[in-house]
Length: 226
Length: 351
Image 1: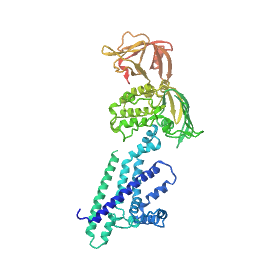
Image 2: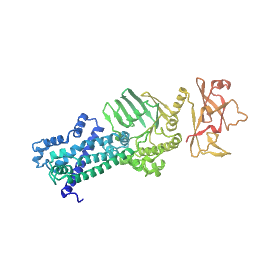
Image 3: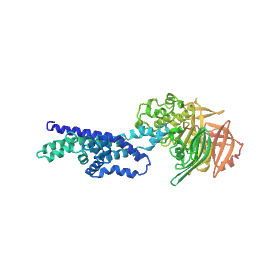
Image 4: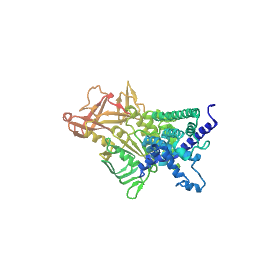
């Protein structure tokens, strides 16, 4: 990989770190929220759904700015965290949070569809065989929607790899700390003579996205075959 | 088993009501589709909640709207075998089979897994995936899975519907063997009269969301004969046959029956249509039919232009169907002696 700079490798590694952490952290929450939306009769479902799906339609910059208001030093969560000496903005944690929020609707959407497609009679059969509601969820519903969970994770992973708007606002563009692939490309294109380097990172980005989409379509295929 | 049900359930336009008390071990729920049989099953298993009323099984209150008792399905110990078996597709046959057993408290486990695997002949299936099983195999696994939880009661919801005729009669012996060997009370839901007569002793009629009355499965068969144009099938259980030339001879009460079909089991069930029985006033001199049975007319019952005769032959009973004109000509009345003539090929083997 002679055409890549050492700082590019940092950016690629960082992108992976951010996308993996965001996806892994969001998955249990995504499963929980999907369960609430599919299997319970809680009031205000539409509202919850709306809030979760908002990042899907809002410009990522807006999401980033709202997060900045929330996590900034004087923000609702930020001021509370600063007492504990924890800083979110301009850190890796910030980049992860930004990616997680933006990718979350894709994850929930996929898991939810998967759970809805599991025939409820399997759960009923499990209940009559002595499984409690939770037991039936973890041994029947969740494994049977496993592929949908995986498909959602790959989608979210891909989205996180490409996250730009929210990340640059919440976490900034600090090489080696928060500079992921899209941010590095942005910096190259705004420096004179950086075109070639931007292009090589673009190629890496295309390759990675393609691999993730491949994994996603494999998962989708096996869902259909079932 | 004692079952006490007084419930009401409204589902959209459909009103379901049941008020009955049952005492027996093999109970059928009989009725056309959409009559509420499955609703009753779901209410019993706890998969749906009645609007009001109470359900008691033996000494346990499963549901009572007055005292706000509603045991969840996993605490009821009421097993269900569904029409489409609902085997878990992500597990092997073995895992499916032991799913319920693992969740059954140690002190309740009274049935040996190896015994049930043997009775249902599941050994060769154990390591297969469930998606490769045939319909009959699926139902055997589903039954095994439910029996292993040692339930207080097993509900079977049309377990044979969707299987072809041959397969159906291959499965029934497995079912009867399981229920007699492990002594588990059964509620059998079906709209098939033959299945009812083979599997149950007592039948509850379900019609338009209302559980009507209970009767013996035999009485049900007779009632249906009266109400529709359907024929009546005598179900005759015979032991092992002896060779009789190129035919087979069976002992039936104090008499002998000659059949074309050879039963391979210790117990074989044959079907004989009531219309296949010819009646003669006296013993005919010679006939091509192989079975000539002296009988006494015990009961007569006329519907339109059909007459149903209950014939006593020794300790056994046969139902024959003739027309009123024959009744007049043969001067048939209750207590009269006649000879029933049946061809050897008129019997068809069910089990």
